[in-house]
Image (tube, rainbow, N blue to C red; front, side, top):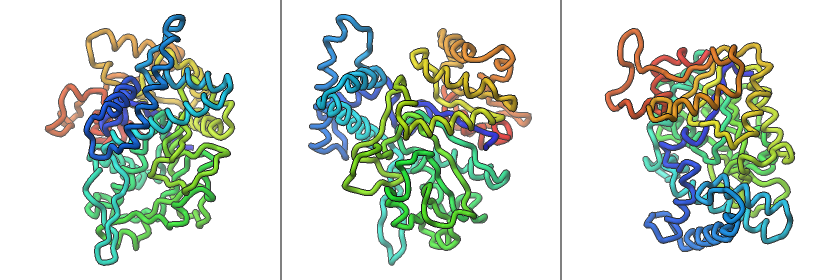
Length: 407
């Protein structure tokens, strides 16, 4: 088990262009209305029109129910319960909506998949799709790994592939600050059984990280998948636990035309609404069980971009069950911009976290992370007070002194 655990909410991926939960529906409407986007196809527009039509069918619910049809969590939850009630049309609505969510993420994300181009027999990477903020994040994490021999565990509620893609992108950079030290393999584990060797094209393709420097490949820097057939004795294990599913997760029991890939979206992905009973889904319940056990032994938890909404009662009790029996816990760091805003949001967010834990645990919780060290202001010139509590704030602290957040 790792001493350090990151818990990542929608705010973590915001700088990658992924909309927050309240912005997904508006993005669908924008795309459906023909908003210009170089990757938007006629098929995409048709898909978004279908998704909006499904949302409009929920209009009669407003007469008796209080739900927000502009919030993806609310819409997904209603559609899920309709599906539980039976009917092939309800199942089809879920599939259409999941596909629409996947396309919103892909069209919005600034962290794109690899663009392979042949150059005299070598693979090189196009500059398109790199986002420095997330490269900096993995740079700090890998530097910490090389010092400690241990990766943090990442627990995320996000469906996107920002983590996987930015990690792979970093390893393509010849001038990467610590790449003189070889990392033989990185074994990426989701603890999600359907994402196993028989599904992964990554195994069949011998997924080397491409680089303009072929020596990086020769040194064996390699991203392999969980349960691959290769010898993993020398692999460094990296865990990314996606509690609500992912756009690259295959749905159990469905036959797909194509193999699944770590950094590519799935044609019909497993995406779960936050209030759905995860324990009833055997495949995803193992992800939650692993996350529970990881949190029960962690010394240090870092929440980034997760507001712990009161509507997500399931998560509130999950955190109580996970951290309640943890006698090793020393610190809980919480990064959220509203903590630094003097408009009432601070007390509300802090109150939600405090409601989860005892007074003893509350004393271990850190909400305000000041931008100073003993040597003075630690951030780059482009940092401003508007960045406080954001992903950028957390990453700047991590890069300046990883021991501030990690053990």
